[in-house]
Length: 128
Ligand SMILES: [Zn+2]
Image (cartoon, rainbow, N blue to C red; front, top):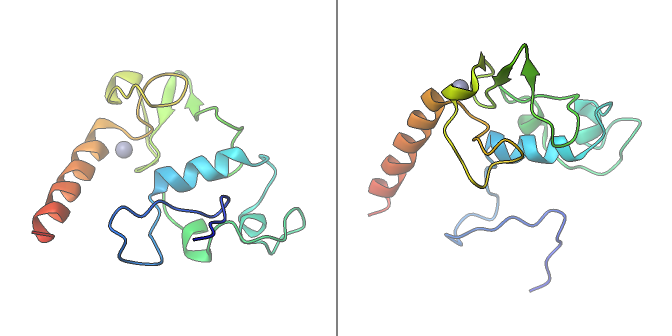
């Protein structure tokens, strides 16, 4: 199988061809590109980029931050912006994640993490 590394998504279930990317994944993609890129650029319709990186639905998701500086998370007076709910919260409100970028924290707050874990457990139940 030939894979296009740029657009390749790991699909552990091997079921759907089109995998829904999480906000976190999309945010990581956004963060890799220059901060002056617009949503249009990410869809390949803008001046800076003609390749489609994200779909329209993905660029219009709630909680995504465009105009980011690569790899640097959104801080505002010592508070970090949650990638899921978009609220600014203290670092203590973010769960530790040793795989998380620079600060070793997840990009979503604890409240969102609980919801996320709950959804994950429910999805496991459904697959039984
Ligand atoms: Zn949150």
